[in-house]
Every structure is written in structure tokens, then in C-alpha cells.
Image 1 (cartoon, rainbow, N blue to C red):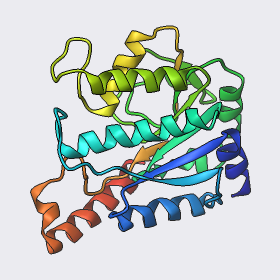
Image 2 (image 1 turned 90 degrees about the horizontal axis):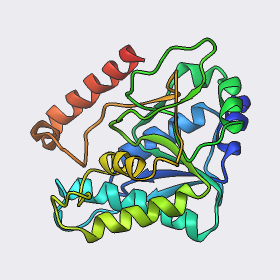
Image 3 (image 1 turned 60 degrees about the vertical axis):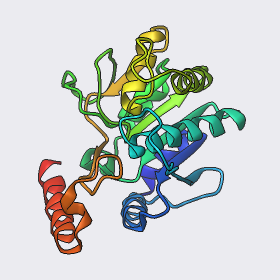
Image 4 (image 1 turned 90 degrees about the vertical axis):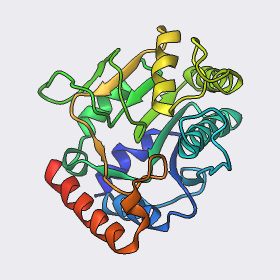
Length: 240
């Protein structure tokens, strides 16, 4: 297990775990996932960022979408203010892949040797399969921001871009309020010089759980919520 910690979090100046304070269930899940990998919270190195829950959507698709956007922006702004050069950002519904749990050092060594600004360690893209797995440059659109890294000049560039999105009106052709993963894609289109890479073998998956961005009606009923959570956990195990 110690090899996973050395291979993952010690490669970054700081690892941020985004968690809504009201979601103790998700915090328990992600801390257990990190503990399974031999990683514990460490001030200045591996920290929980209290996710933002705004009172209104203000042009975003939902209140949750705005909160997600503001939370990721808050993480990046803090990284910029602390003059960090490489940060790993994790959402609290992440599940590490078996490949990462069993090592993954060679693949992460390759990431260290590459020039990149944005790296997707987990994603839903159809990447070419390589032997051994490796990080590859990509221009594909991806949904999800559950497991990614930003480094170098891409950090302040992304903060500036997100601030511009916040200042625009909904529907602005340059990109107004939107889901955060969409903003990442539009940022990449606006800054083609920022190299984006993605793992040919994802190192983590978004674990199915009740969403604060697009909650379903059955997640509001205690008995159905518990059943829904159980089915999601089973589905996550099966699909890994």
C-alpha cells in the first residue's frame, strides 16, 4: 500500500478532496478509499476542501452545478495563491481502480516525464489501449471532473478563464455559466497550447452515489435512498 502513496500524492504539491460538509457519507467513503491506498490526510499535502453550496443557481443549470463550479475554482485559486506548481483534485465520489491499487508506478512515472497542463487520471473517454498503460495527449471532450491534475501556468490561466465565465451572461457564445466539466473543455479549446493528457487505463472511477448537482426524486426518500445507494455500490464494483 505504501507504494501507492509514494506513486500518487507525493508526486503533487497538494491533493485536494472536494467534499460538501453536509455529505458525511461521501467523506467517509473517500477517506476509506484513501486509507485503502495507504494515504491519510496531511495538512498542506492532502486536504479536504469544504465544497461551496450557494443559495441560488444565478444562471447555472442548477444550484449544485454552480456549487461544483465555485468549489473547483476555489481549489485552483487557493493553489495559485499558495504558489503551488502541481495539484491533484479529487471529488468525494472517487473510487481508485484496481490498476492503481496494485501499483501504477510506471504509468505515473511517465506522467512525471511529460509536459502537460491538465491531466485526467480518471475520465470517460475512449482512449487507445496501450501496453503498458500510459498517459496520452488528447483533445477529446470528457464529462466528469472527479480525478484530475493541473500544473504550471495552466493553474492561473484556468482561474482567469473561470472568472471570465462567471462574469458572462447565460448563453454567451464565449461561454457563460455552465457545468464545470464543460468549462474545462471550453478552456482547453480556448488555450490549445495547454497540453491535455489522459490515462489510457483510468486510475479511478466516479462511484455511483446520490448527487448534489442533479439529485433524483428517490434520493429524497430515506428507504429508497438506502436501496439506491446499495444498488449504486454494486454497480460500481461490477463495472470496475
